[in-house]
Amino acid sequence: MKKISFVIPMYCEEKVADECYKRVKNVLNELSNKYEHEIIIIDDGSKDQTLPILEQLAKQDLSLKIISFSRNFGHQAAVTCGLQYASGDAIVIIDADMQDPPELIKEMLELWEAGNDVIYGKRKNRKGESAFKLFSAKMFYQMLNALSDVEIPKDTGDFRLVDRKVVDAINQLPEHNKFLRGLFSWVGYKQIPFEYERQERFAGKTKYPLNKMLKLASDGIIGFSTKPLKLVGAIGIMSVCISFILLLYAIASYIWNLNNLSSGWTSIMVAITFFAGIQLLSIWIISEYIGRIYDESKRRPQFIINKKINIKE
Image 1 (cartoon, rainbow, N blue to C red):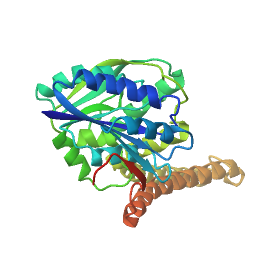
Image 2: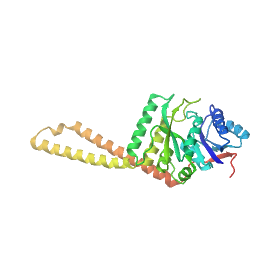
Image 3: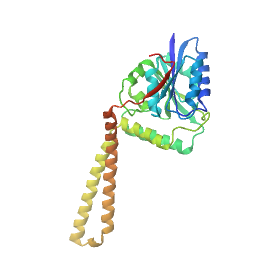
Image 4: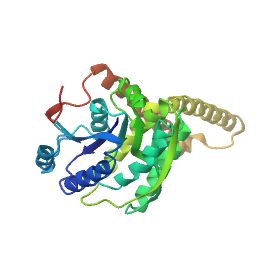
């Protein structure tokens, strides 16, 4: 009998933890005649009652496996950990907020059984999200695909059903700052979209504020493209051309007395600030890449586990 693993990261989700478990468990119980199952929930250093709630649930259900981090290491680290501990033939990645309905897994399993290796959720509608978030997400995917060498599907998140061999390939990738939805595209295999309507959050507040969204966007762009570095070179060439044009203008002005150069302090200041801004922008782009190299060179673990429940080593 084949086995399904659910990987669910949680961070301060005391209001949704119980509901999330019940809905996922109900779906898996309906499939119990065809599949074995396990539910792996990663507590990403929650500071509320999320972990005590999960511990109580785990006492009643040995198929519920809990991994608790020593602190908050981030959503992508939590999912990475879950993938490393998942033992199923098919692995489902889903968030705890129930915006991605677990009941859709039945249809996704049919697509998996038909020979597809990755079935990724593609959002037709995104209920309960602000116009700013919808606009910024659209711009992010357009920019990411414009810069990346690998096409990453638009309007997708981490919600997906993945075959065992794909997860094994992902687990072999050593990088520290992972952008998983990009890595799933990078490893290849047979992938198809599954369109659905994303629901409003069941309860609580989003754990992805603007600063974390920007960090995720940075991981996606820097992790899958060197084009920003090439852009620095293009800007440098453009700056040299502008400087050369200004030099020719200054020589012409001196020869034909086109302008009083002594009164040109405004143009001088504009030129200085313009080129200084380009230099600082270039240094910032390069420093982002150097910072990632520095992170990787330290070879620190992506997460530290504080507690495991119902997990046999």
